[in-house]
Length: 209
Ligand code: 3PG
Image 1: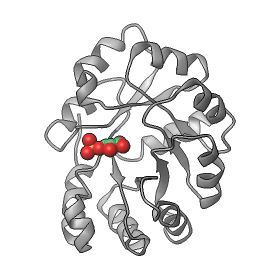
Image 2: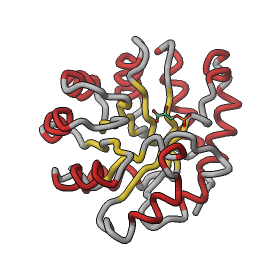
Image 3: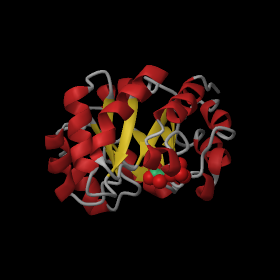
């Protein structure tokens, strides 16, 4: 799974982290994000519409790589894989969940926020980790510090990252991409303002370290 996940995470500098209240917007939203250059899309399992959104995107927008985020329990692994999610993201990874994730039928990017958690996940075979909540847990300075002792781990920092701070993360050798909600603000999602989202996404797609 690691090589597949690596290739998915290298597709774009930013993963929009999207909370969908109404699955009907999901196909147009995915087309918009793909067109703007952000084909990797994390749909958080925080609303009842999330699974429908994942399966709609998986079916209708094959150019998108739709991930399931906010996976908190082992029981959700099968659900999101069946819905068509291409990989799984967790905000944090207690050992029981990590054991279940190790058996997942799709790749997994487990979340961590400490060196010990990162080491535990590395021992379990995970090499691409979500660093969450990135800004609150030490930000780019944390990532810079762990690259020496943990050179084989790659991170997707997420949490408190925006357009302004993203380049300072993307310039680090152990950052593969960053995640964030700034591309799909709640206001634009509510209004279905895809033009605004397309502008934010195109700008995010152009970011470099
Ligand atoms: C996540 O689950 O990744 C976070 O909710 C990201 O949120 P933020 O980019 O607004 O900090």
